[in-house]
Amino acid sequence: MSTPLTAAGYVWDLLLVLVRKELKLRYRGTSLGILWSLGNPIALAVVLHVAFRRVLDVDIDRYAAFILSALFPWQWFSNSITEGSKSFLENGDLIKKLPFPRIAIPAAVVAGDLVHFVITLPVLALVLVWESGTPPPVGWASGVPLLVALQASLTLGAVVIVASAHTLFRDIGQLTRVALLLLFYVTPILFPASMLPPDLRWLLVANPLAPIISCWRHLVMKGSPGPLLPAAVVWTLLVSVTAAAVYRSIRPRLAELV
Image (tube, rainbow, N blue to C red; front, side, top):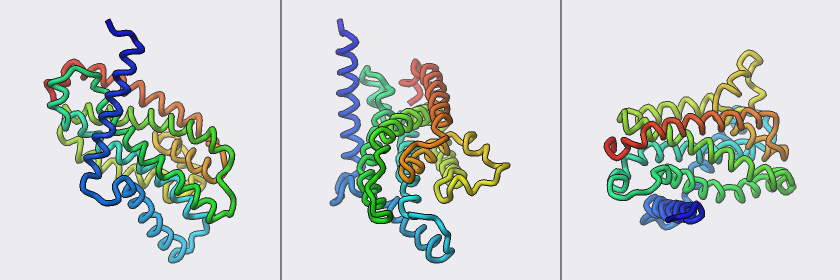
């Protein structure tokens, strides 16, 4: 008879195996491997830097750190949703043949992108030093683990909801791409939250991703998660509870649906 400790060890080992598989498949045959995870956000940051600072002459202090502090966590969320939305369907054979906690499949996708995100943190620290001449704030020591835990929970919940819906409606994959594009532009990534007019400030708490992105930027630029941390916690709890309910409803039929 397995004990809770043994079961937890089994789930952890399974998660590690699935994460390794995700990373190997994603970078199979490439020469730089996981370092490619830095390519897209850095290239986009360079383009935005030229467009906004050199062409439009936008006056934002430490613009590279400003942009990357939001782009890196956005990349984690966006990539997890894109890959995770089809995770149940792509692992249909595994779900049908082996008994194991199915939640480990989307969790492995989120954990794999967490590895990518952790790699970006030293880059972000170097950019901050380059632009300001000072090391990252001391608040990073407590703020980074807190925000990582919140975003991991929020992202996993969102992935579980989307992946579960995808087993019922095959159009979810296409709708997800459109939704992510819209979400990118209504989240304070390209612009500071302070630019929103007073009558639109409610978007900062109505958008589930805006609080956590704002917290990352506030932590990087000012050394603390900032005033939207409570909103980020509330959204994380709401999404996690919703995901748990969705997963419980679909779990008995998952093998049939995939």
